[in-house]
Image (cartoon, rainbow, N blue to C red; front, side, top):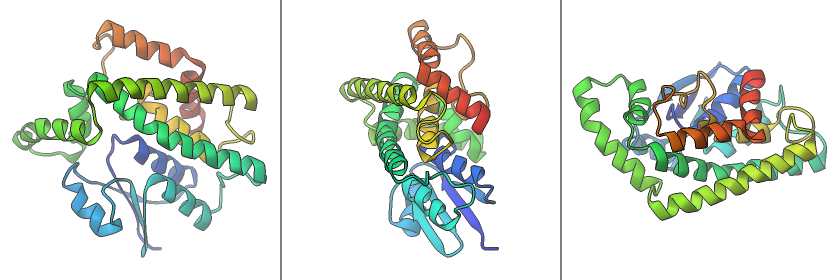
Length: 246
């Protein structure tokens, strides 16, 4: 069997989207964690892009979580995540694309609240098992690089909060229309995996990379804001998808 490797950042919710799909389909794969920043040397060589995830499947290389999703649906149709009905398939594609766009705002808004906390850089760098002096040296460099790359600045963070609210409301309306369990077609689809994985950092499902803050360690206002998100219909839905489908 050809080797299958997912190049990723462990903390990336876009990489989680690809991990979830691979796991759902029961496909064997190895994880290769690339260090943020220097990862571009490998990602450019593999797929001529600056982002992760990238999937190497034997001789085939696919970059970007959405391209990976449709590649896997095409070449590994078992346990399909694509509805057979044409209208439902079109709705799923639209929802998956919308969630890809909203995922950017999830990341920017949440980093805007917590990027200076030590837990964030620990979660980002600990998986690489770097010598302690090197990790201490890399921590401020990685933090500032993340801040610049994702535009973690007040006006952009405020705008992302507004866009995020639009996305949450859109999903709640869709869940009402679909009956509240799955977004399209009454069963798990790419739309559900995209929505649940890309929103997961907001609700920190147990056992995920985003479940990093000790209870009561966040400022009270932020703690309440995140608790309110978990109690919203869409927040409870994400947690349920992780409990039953992940």
